[in-house]
Length: 334
Image (tube, rainbow, N blue to C red):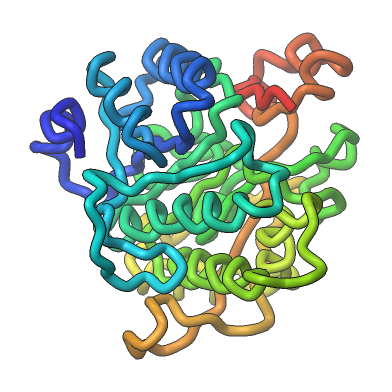
């Protein structure tokens, strides 16, 4: 942690706290500044927040701007998750191309550094709300869709089940009418905004995602179209949770915040939750732990908008845009 982060988190209890997080390199500094501006301006406040720095230059810049930031310790090999000897002061993500998302030689390491951050934050007890650097936060009303933790501000009825899932993610859905039905996943998942609840299920997803990246190492079919998001789509799949009451009981037993009558008044267009068919280990390889399934849901496209839905479809001007279930919260500039 840099000094601003150390001061920010000195009095923060990780368990039960949602950490607002982004991640990048110094090559994206303008995007970092933009993300920070809107996070600091959002109401209700988005706090605490943290920037994950993949190189020393970004960590230094954040310190100079009084921005809470963290770097991976230099001894950590993100491929093996083992310690190594090094003379670097912090982990250095080195690239021969400034934008790494579609660079086949760099995206794997970039993705593994991101997952290393997510793993450490989840292991510390945080819930993690990660958003890409090109996401603008219009306000801080994320709880409407993601959490039952504040009894005074419960989620909107459409999010009653969603606010209990291990993993929440935005999509590339363009049909707002279909999306409003809440009935299923019909578009590619987009990792622009992802909520990871501090549960065994979320940890299992992160480790499964990490393993999916590791399997690509040295692959002769690796192209610029294989990236962290495409692998996320392979890992996060499953069938709809049908027995909601049994699932609610299991969630409460695990300690996920929710009232016993959370599903008493579900509307017909409540957003469905899905569960993986296979189980995954919520721990590092070799640590030894019981495998578990994880649950996930998709965030609605009107509140969590993308470039097309904002600039072309103008969701911010659609009928009912001022209502809580439709009010835009983020714009992902893709």
